[in-house]
Length: 466
Figure 1 (cartoon, one colour):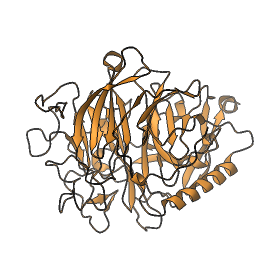
Figure 2 (tube, one colour):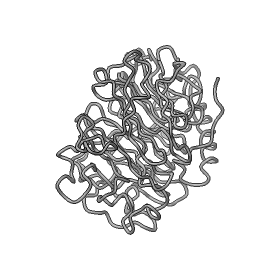
Figure 3 (cartoon, helix red, strand yellow):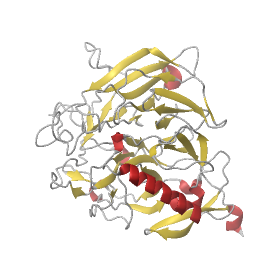
């Protein structure tokens, strides 16, 4: 049975009117796509399952082409979804207990070890209310169940407030685990639990908040400490110098969703803004380590209103940012009307549709928009928020009208073992797939522009050859 729509999670609320904005945006979305979709148009997006409870992430173990795993923020359940049969297993793969579930807290991230087929290790990112990275092991007798008694704490971080928890974890091409943390919550990265003057995100000494961490979970540099079960990669930027050895990059506000491009190794980060700009960051090849992404001095490509300043040393600007509605902020100057309040980072598409290859799909939780762009290949030193091509608004794309349901509150994107893209709707608990199983092939052609953004549709190969 389809669940009722639920309130938006405060973890991504950027202003008090977000509920009204989402409702308005969802209504406009339905009107716009209905108007754009020609009679008999075949959609590219299929609803795989419905009725999950506040889904916030989807992933799959390496080389597992039959299952995807979806985490539910507040139940603590990791659900097994079987896309081919459109089913959810009756018993959750694992239920993580002891969660704090207020505001944006809960079960937030999941990653399978690159050698999962051999060691059966999976890692979760939770708040209880502090941030914890935990490891579990799959049951030796049942591949559809994890052993709850196998829990091992890898890392713990004190969390001063209930918001800006970050939440993404993922293994890089180097085999290390990357952990995205928020600045600790509250406005302007200041107040109780925040470093005076600089804020947590700019503090690299005894402060793991507002960072992306890089750790080796296959070794242990702290055998005498049962709460720290990891090692430090020797080439992390602060090894041997002042700063926390775990840090890979810093200067982040709330990097809720990030991903590695499975082809290039680029690390894409969607960093949720405060009241001015949302941003998309790229660490080419995963980065060199030590990059400063700017917060709290910078919000997108501008000085943070009231507390910001000039770009700090080592600052890497986003490749794209966009403003909140009604703020008057220019950010990097995307097309007029291109607005939102809470970016949801996505994936560079590497699935079966050739024409989508290399497009970075992302969205906005508040507006319900679904977008894609291509990185233009600029050198990091030239990043200025305009380093993209083919910025595309898919809510006006008839091929992106789901066969059932509506994509509105995008809490996450996901990728399966084959590179197929998924979109999660938080409010209705829907999981959508792009493309649907057995989707028709064809090419993408422009059908018009809205807000200065090209809208596309897909036409059959026979029509192209005619």
